[in-house]
Image (tube, rainbow, N blue to C red):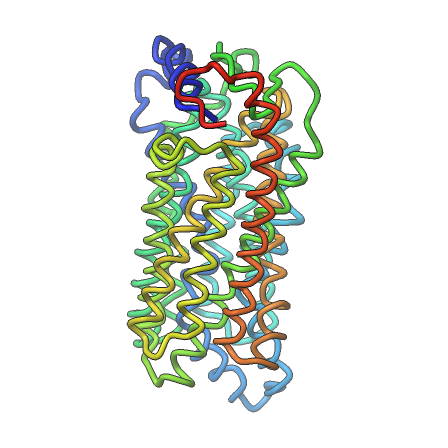
Length: 438
């Protein structure tokens, strides 16, 4: 995408209000804050308990009525169980939000999230604990689907694109805070980590006051013409081929990313003899770099004049470099540096995918398409332990990260080839366009 195209597509939106709904316009800042704060719940299922996994496993496998090693082999999937429920619940949640309304589903899901998440402070039977993890996932699906839809219901395209990028940044920043707090709490008592799931209690009054049920007849606001090089067709059919490709990118992204929160706490404790607070800090560093990069996504995209395929290539290249550094890291400091570079790459992918879908999918189908992105995201989270556990058992964590690096650099190369294929026909059409990057 050229710089002139970017600026041309942005200018018409500047004359439009962010929203035509007077209820939202009156409290626009609070509405945006509430959406971003509630969106941060997406990171809680994994970040809140990841540093406590070794202590959690040790506690339950030591119980007299525990099945010991049998449960130990299932613990790497403890973090991913909510993702399976999110995967299964995202599409039904979309239909329920259309039938019941956005706000009722969101409020009910927040209550379910608080109850199922914080139950870990008291449960003494491991099967029940696993059951609450699944319930927690359905609660996240019920919350995230209407939140994404509300961004489209309330705001015009320009504001919508900015908020989608800030959603990813808020999730990453929440991951930093929650991972650090969880690491401290895990060193005291692993049960304390589950208290973090009660945080949404603070959001309930905000959702009630500042997220009114949208008027379905006024959801789609006037929008500027989008960049034709991205395949946008607001009145046409859904571009399924591109959509499925985006879903595949997000699934592979999460498969590779989730190796860290699943394996890192065990590696730090068993191989390096480091306390849980440091593994929490390491996961937080990954989330921090992702958050910063997500917040800078629009600036990176415009400054480097990259289209969506170009961002994918850049993101996978950075993530591959970071994984290679982790693979050869001689100490925890270099390990953290590798995580930071990896986070810079991965931080570009999720806002890129959300904005990409926003641009190419007709407005009438956009909510369902973004719900599919949530499902693809959590499919990768669910599959990641199967992938990482097998490789770690045979090769160890350093070689596992090297395998991830090779996979990512291969994907980045494919993305660059696709970028060339997309740019080649555009170069003849826009040869005389000033500042064209094609």
